[in-house]
Image 1 (cartoon, rainbow, N blue to C red):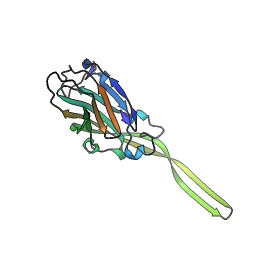
Image 2: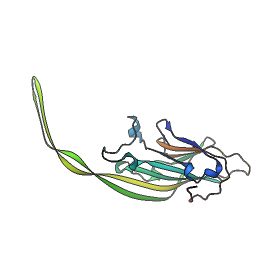
Image 3: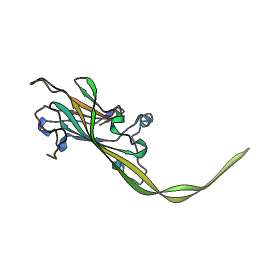
Image 4: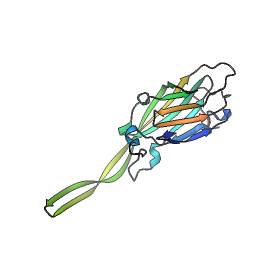
Length: 193
């Protein structure tokens, strides 16, 4: 996965395509978040991995297929097609096709605080401030989008397989794999090999 220059890369043997070894994970960085140089965060009491993104390379022969799971805070929840997924093969960037997108929403409750009284006063020589807070039940909503991303490409028999890269969130999060093609895994299937 890649975000603002940070890349997680794995090299595979062809027999590992479609297995647990072809899976990479990372945290999303949107263009708004990347300006500050930080990845998406959760409120302090919520585990960070509830927004962990995943991508698995499931096929590289004939077409390139990636199974993706993108988890975001609800304010960033967009259909995957709106995030412009792309594939880069032999230096050529081509838009990916989003197939079978399934959306789930998870609510994580936590106790936060809210201000019940806030008073400020300014005098020529001083500033006074008083704030009283109370506990408040809050919800952190996570949108999870699971889909297959596909890039069809016909290759001449015996041609060298290129390095495959899939940009799940264009310019924000990408998964990169390198493999020698011999896998015949279908686009939608994967195993835990």
